[in-house]
Length: 459
View 1 (cartoon, helix red, strand yellow):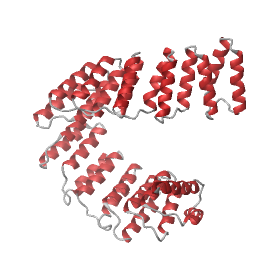
View 2 (cartoon, helix red, strand yellow):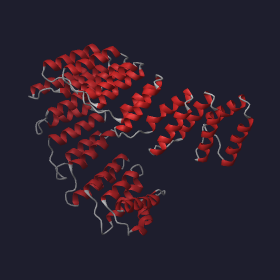
View 3 (cartoon, rainbow, N blue to C red):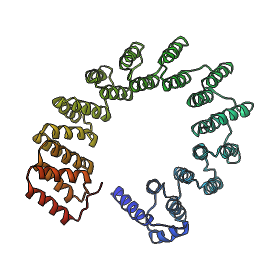
View 4 (cartoon, rainbow, N blue to C red):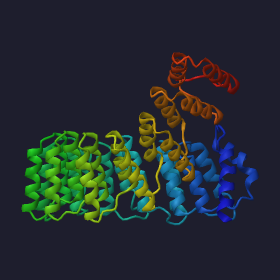
């Protein structure tokens, strides 16, 4: 009941905020009649997230909410608004809000300033990002290693590893770097393909007493994967073993993706064997990546073997895993296996989605399996999986190409009844096929339905 009331209030407020406002005050005036709404953290968050790309509506609502006597913004809502203003490049207003939070009694946290620093760095305001870190003490925060690492990581993600390096050098006399500090720089230099600079940082890391770890080495592996230098990748992985920090599942996933992209499929399977041999248990993400690559490359049997091995490794497949397997089975004309996989999803309480059904529907059209197609569409209805415009066009196109024109007409008419606009290609294909088969009555009926529905074909 409470949830229904919140949903209703969110929709009422959202309807008002959809308007085009020229000022924050205009938003406040538009919301004036809704003072009776019971504001809560959940409601405010939902409104802010819905209008995060419309800063005037979001901030106008936020300021209006501050004036409501029965409600106080939570720290999380303040931080969300700071992030929205930063994302919208309204940095002056962002800083005003941060100062307001500080004056309200120490609402500024490391979370707040992380959002500030990241938004500034993302648009190239590197000096301002550094200055934001310098304001930590003023805002009641400690300038420590954690804060410095946030700044450096933001600069690296903002494509300025050079500035991140400068920050580390300038601050190391007052703030001690840790392993994460050095790993940020190693990753940054590898990202811009400056291997020698990354190696210098690793040497400095060891001099400082921080032992390079799996994160450090994985950055180098990622560098060589981008270069498609798999001999060097093997070398780094051997070095990791010798240094006592063997590759983890993240390392192997990066390498598997690179090998798959380079079509080095035998090497990919060999790496998988070594991975298990070394006691590194793959996770669902790793399996999804490998199964997808093998399936796309026509190695359906290998993909099936991996899928079966998931249960041996006690790794539960995800909906994405099943979708990839079903799509691959359909592409290889394994109709029965594809349907078995769908049934298995249901037995294991996985919720199929549109991506699950689409390849099955396409296969049914190609193989003229009308009974199976009817079953799948009914199953989608029972599971509340909506059939969208793309699926209707897929059905009409597939049925047209395979001679099932009566069924194609039925789906085309249903598309019109649901107010969907068919693509120009779909409409023209149906008209051409009906003309070729001499089905002039059916063609005229479709044209009449189009006219009555007042729908114009669109590309």
